[in-house]
Length: 272
Image (cartoon, rainbow, N blue to C red):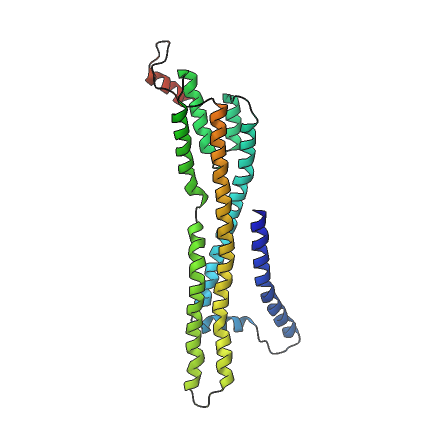
């Protein structure tokens, strides 16, 4: 995750460093009352030169940054607190109900919460039945992992789409800009310098699209790596829980003491 932060910040800062230099130069020349080559009007000109494609790229960049910040904080929290949950479980001996309740409080809102919930329900059932099957407990933990995994890559499809769409959209804007640039040749008394200037303006859309795609690609790969590590933590927690609880769910035989299975399950449900 630290590598992701460093790479993303480097790419972001290098991309916007040039923009800041241009804008700073524009402000400096504005203070000297010189003719501005890069001003708000010129930026609007560039956007209009691509028939509005640059506006769409700005929207894609805003959406991309929102998804990046959202997933970054979620996965960062999930990995950090998930390691703490795994450490707490693995450093206990045989888990008891108070231990599970304490760990469940820490795991609230984390991917590990569903596994701790399965372990807590298992403990309640074993308390009433007295015998258990490790295979059934393992299956329920696997089920909890499968149900939790989709929440880890939530909204990453947006990044994947932007990585593919942004360069194509930028290229489309450049093609539209080329139409405007070469249309000058049809005008009487055209100036060749106007054509080359128009081509340069048209290429801005492609550059912006590639820049947006690079940020998205770095983030997408880093998030996938973080998701793989989080799933590994869940699998590790599953094994540790099975070891600390000595196997799991309950064999559905009638318990001793004259209490029916339905009554025992009702008591467990009321305690959960």
